[in-house]
Amino acid sequence: MTAVTTESAVPIENFARYEFKYLLNAKQREEIETEISHFMTYDGHVHEELGNQYFVRSLYFDTPAAKHYYEKIDGTRLRRKFRIRSYSTSPSSEVPIYLEEKGRHVERTFKHRVQITQDDLPIFYDPDRHLELRDRYPDTEIIDRFIYSSMKRRISPVVLVDYIRRPYNSPFDIHFRLTFDSELRAAAARTLFPDAATRWHLSQAGYTILEVKFQRRLPAWFHRIIQAHDMRRLSISKFCKGMEVCGLAVDLA
Image 1 (cartoon, rainbow, N blue to C red):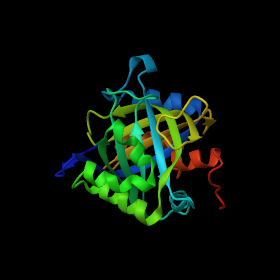
Image 2 (cartoon, rainbow, N blue to C red):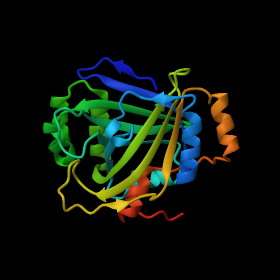
Image 3 (tube, rainbow, N blue to C red):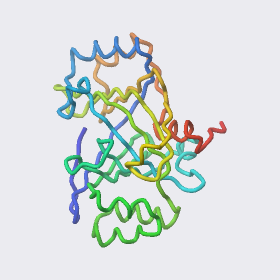
Image 4 (cartoon, one colour):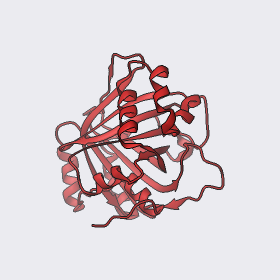
């Protein structure tokens, strides 16, 4: 995974790569993870107390008509959406919070992100206040695009998605990364840290989403694992599954 910091008032990280996704049952995950452990190591963000994993929380934005959801379902080749990401279930000055722009350009996915402050979260939640972000994050392209999308499409927070991630990096290829995402759950929410009464729904219960991220080509050893386990690529989105289990959108296909 590569990141490039662009010149702006606030540093922006940019990622561009191919992403393949696979849905694994418990047996498949155990077998595949055992095999890849001979070639890869955990990245530096895992927590031993979580079983060499870490927690991920994303608050996704969409339009009143769920336009971003249907763009994904329809396979629109040029698309983008916004989310706020954290790595904690509660506010913490020690855990960063990011505004992320995630999308696809033909076959490659891209992600841009900028760190934001916890104090500014109420502004991001309220479309009527989004213009205030220009003063708080001046000359920051991702913030400008967020404001533009808000003005054009009236985006606001709609669904919160949590999961546990075990990430692997390759010592032989810095651009090759695997992540095993499990224990997915989702809630209809307007804030990153909702109250305890929030109703959560399990998503893909009993399964793990394996995300394969690379720049140019898959290593030969991993291609052999794909063939040996007859792994089939899927177009699966945690955002879309979250919208569906929360009753916020329906796949009409």
